[in-house]
Length: 327
Image (cartoon, rainbow, N blue to C red; front, side, top):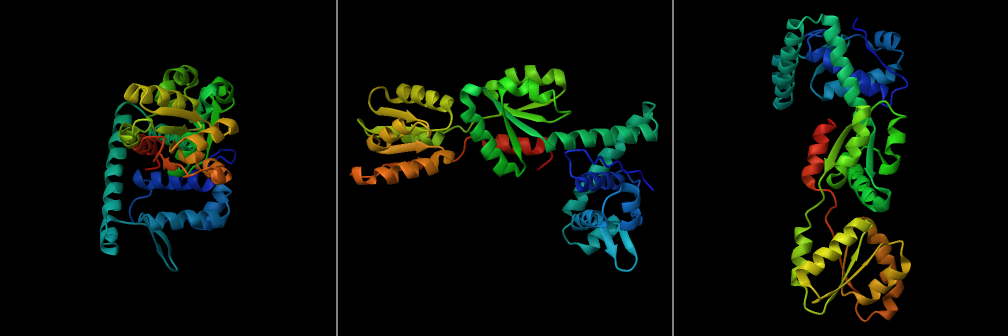
């Protein structure tokens, strides 16, 4: 029986820990093709997990095409030939086979360098556990003066990654990291150096995301008629400052620019009454709609609302998914 290490106090769910360790045992051929996996009762005894949790893990492995349940007999590791005959789509198995080859090569290299099998196993499991914990706790950080930018990043990444994130002002990052063993810090590329200076001494990795390029919005800005009034609303004060500078550089005094954050009710009300077009981020949309509805009786024509597609660039989101093992 392979000794599985389940850490009950870990932020990683126990089922995820067990799933990853069984997958590794199969990929490293500790459980070779055709091997009968321990029963749920046996694993419950060895790991202390509930049998329902173990059954859930086995179902996930079966859905992934790694194991096969034979009624009345047990759960068996699939052989490649069985996989191909059972499922016309063998892309997953091919990916699994390639991954196993990578593991075998890495294991051979470790043995060549003098590691024992036991030491190599601990190295692999330790690295897997560390990366899982990094994925389990993701901190988004920006300076407190532009915390709205962090709110936009956290909002979009939570939707894209489907994992919880914690927003931490850059000024508090060192204190938060001193209380955690591992994690991943995400920030805008504008603040990468400050974040790395804090996180690197604690061996916590920092990943920078790029901001959306706003090409569509810039094209709209160039096409606005002379004398138009454009309202720009965002949670981020940095975005508003940049928008004012860029708008003036492109149009000069040809158009009037009014900016506001949603919590500034006076400026928001002024903007809604004055602007023919309002450019805003998705997070600000509910507050802007409410302000427009409230002012509707005073408006000859309601302003056109243009909602930006995103705040974080799509390439950055894809790269972050790969880094966190979520792709």
